[in-house]
Image 1 (tube, rainbow, N blue to C red):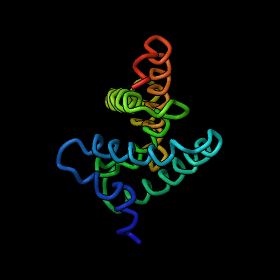
Image 2: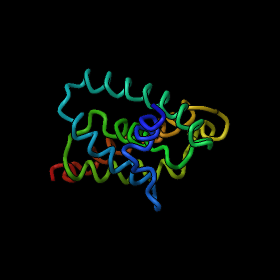
Image 3: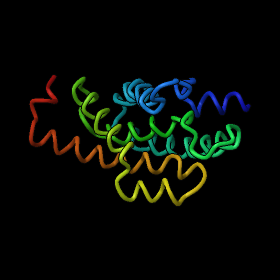
Length: 155
């Protein structure tokens, strides 16, 4: 069971990447999003919510197993954040790339309240919620980009 928790938390061991494990986890998030992108909106919403809750549970256990608070090896939170970034956005190569870039930048800089969550909260919820907030911000930026530069999303 412990190996399964670590495999899921690291998203198939992408989190063990020696460089930029969060970016590697988000790249796997693209693959998960491609699966989700065909879901009707309600199913996408419910599946992403269920994924978020599962990610919190897994992250909580993985922190204990890895012996480190918010270990960089735990990247299931990046997948969650990317799914939120791409929620209800047209699935095009450009939207996926722009969403990826927005999410990674916002996940790294952690605008409020993500920085507070990351600093003050503990456990699986803290691991995942700061990425969920970054994903929410990235989703808003992606939508604004689509309004002001709609041609970007046709490719």
